[in-house]
Image (cartoon, rainbow, N blue to C red; front, side, top):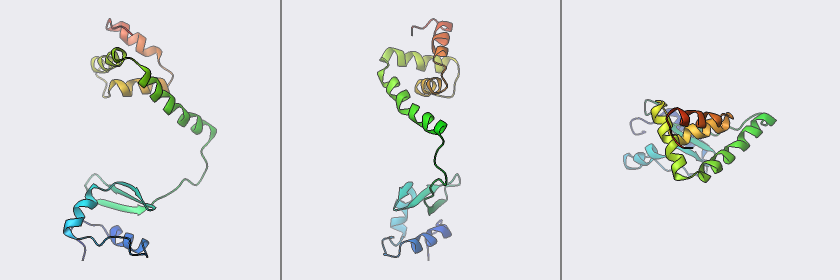
Length: 134
């Protein structure tokens, strides 16, 4: 018998491990299952909005990424590197802009969004609106 709150998928999950590697869930160990999210041994663990624990076999894309997707993915590390190269004063300016514009994001998210969408000129425009140095 499973502890309360475990889905039928957890029972199915035990069947995925023929080696007996799946630990037997007891009330004490089920607390650890609540904290486990992500991929482990080809299985993805998650928790939905109703806090129900879900486990399913990891899926892989059926098609290779398009050149446009690859180019977009390649921009992410560049955007993060540019953020890290900013001074503390510039980062504070971005946080101030995000707060004054009532954006539901941090200065970091605002900068990454501008970088990814090629709108870095917006930062200077917003800084000028609030007499901030950029």
